[in-house]
Amino acid sequence: MKSKDYRIISHLRKNARVPLTKLSRETSIPVSTIFDRIKANEENIIVRHTTLIDFSTLGFHTRAHILVKVSREFRAEAGNYLQKHPNINSVFRINNGFDYMFEAVFRSIVELEGFIEKLDQKFKIEEKETYYIVEDIKKEEFMAEPDLLSLVTDVK
Image 1 (spheres, rainbow, N blue to C red):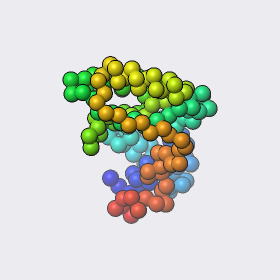
Image 2 (image 1 turned 60 degrees about the vertical axis):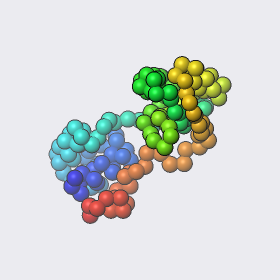
Image 3 (image 1 turned 120 degrees about the horizontal axis):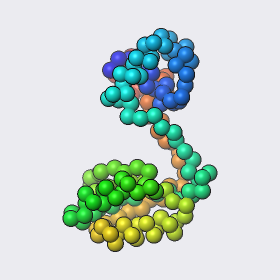
């Protein structure tokens, strides 16, 4: 990947809605080049354009990262269930004794605990750990500072 691609992506990580004309001024890259590089990178690097939400302002005050080890016979089915559940924000396949790590978003601890209990009953959870998120300190910031790109890439 070229240096200009890293610079464009870095600016988009900071604000994906930045007008291309402003991005062009900030990077000294022509608008047409920026447009072409974004389109080319949407095929393989840019997975999707999204919005970060403050869930608590919408009434969802309980968030947790949960690690589960699922009985082998239910592993795939549990993964599919987690991917489709509306209260699950992210799901990851992991190692070190667990199968999945996921972020759950609920209105209350009682709702979250009820969900975990149902999950346990339905898929024979062998082991689980729950980590309640008290505060977001840093979120989705990797490669979002154009001035620091040389620290995370070998491109100058």
